[in-house]
Image (cartoon, rainbow, N blue to C red; front, side, top):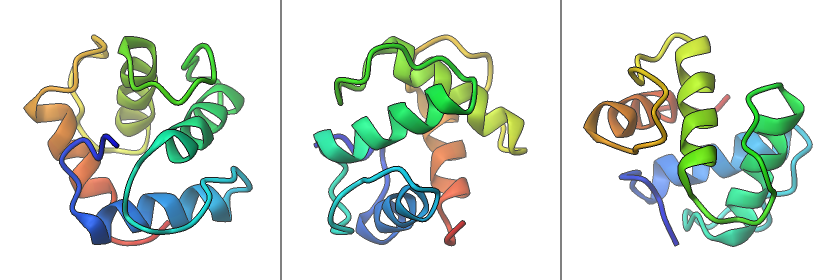
Amino acid sequence: MNNLGLNTARAQNWQSCLNAWGFDAGTVDGQLGTNSWMAAQRMLNDWGYDAGTVDGAVGPNTITALQKFLNAVGENAGNPDGIAGPQTRAAFWNYNATGC
């Protein structure tokens, strides 16, 4: 599980969004495991952010794609560098304050 700093409620918001967008994140339980990250990778790839291989691993390609997505939706994740540092985590936290 890798919630990238999200608490259970905010991780549930992310899972709910992924499910609402048609990417099966599985059970909305607030635990961002393999199914949730595979759904996120499918979404990021389908939406043109190039997360690379859909394997559920939260590696540099997934983080870079997430950073690009967060920047595109108005959250400041900083330079897309594949590192889930404080600025990326804060942007992900802010994005998931409410549902999609």
